[in-house]
Length: 237
Image 1 (spheres, rainbow, N blue to C red):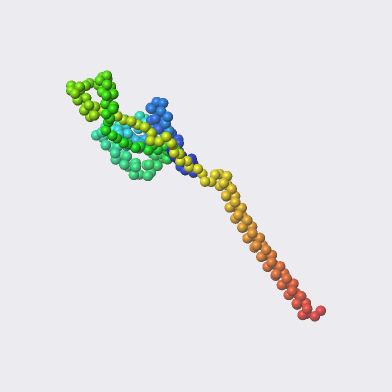
Image 2: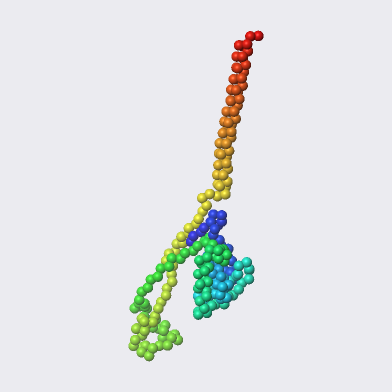
């Protein structure tokens, strides 16, 4: 699982739009949350509905749409397979940035992402020690038996029996959590420190200028006084 920081650190969201809520509420009792993929499917279907009057039949479960600037949920009809209007309409939306921003502005990255690593393996089944149990199960069920079942039941089981087993690869759950390097307090402290530093430099520079002007004035005053004394000593009383 991956957890991203909320705004202002990232642009992720967990907000469930009206269209997503209307779509997922059909799965009674399901614990659902925001999905970027579902959001894009619904905004795509919304644009297709406006252009074609129907929606992509492949995405048959994404029929609950909400038109822009409205809050009314519309259960859109599915397009016929012969009506391919939804294909060029979808291409127009995906290739036009202005339309994407208008219809899919709410479709941002999830703040939490859960990934399941799927591994598929297969083998010939059933194994020999399972054959008798399967034979008894088939004979005691309502499954119709072949005419030559008594002599070729092994072959029938090998060619018609499929077992599907789903299990987790590991018990451990790996969590990746994004944390802020700088918090609000640290940012304010850094800003205050930088401002104080530059203000200090400015005051020092200003004082140096004032001191230089003062010394120049004093120098000129001394020079004027010395000039007057020299003149008085030259001119007799």
